[in-house]
Image 1 (cartoon, rainbow, N blue to C red):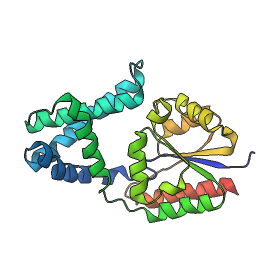
Image 2: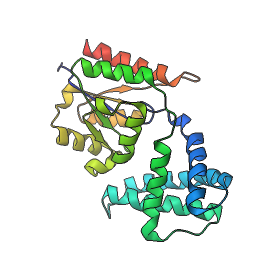
Image 3: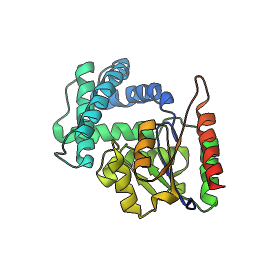
Image 4: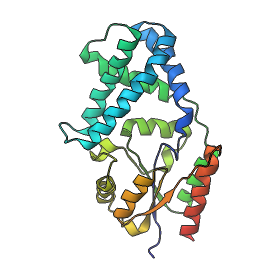
Length: 240
């Protein structure tokens, strides 16, 4: 069996507990957007829940459809749609199209710089992997710039060489093609790498490419960090 030299680490469910983000997004959006576009804070908070559900449906549809633009262009266009959905719910005028992408991205940047994410145990273990000589890359379906901000928030940006969002390689994280694109970009031998993810489907796609996979399994009521660190223990056993 080849020596492990590289880890590909997902964001949501591994580096960040998505369950803790929803309420914080609502609060911070309600804090920011009334100053920019007017409307009541509670209206913006409620609108974000509805707008996110619509956004998620668009993401899933885009990943299954023929491409009409780059993924980076898609993320920008969709940010404006997300903002317009909330404007409709709050009943405030839509900003001009030329301003919508900027306002949406400024809003998301404001939120991501202020969300409270405390995962010291996870960061410590990642640093230990790095200190052992492993190369770490992020492998997420999110946008590259968003991932960079999250890594800065949790104090882990220096641990990762490359931060792969779908837009960085222009391949959606919806099939084995995503991992093939990453492997081609890094030149990593798949037999020498491990993917850490909380999605069984993603682990399956990775294995199609010859990568080993470690699944983060979180039991009912189990603390987030405990589940992730248990997966890291599995990586340690593979390294041994």
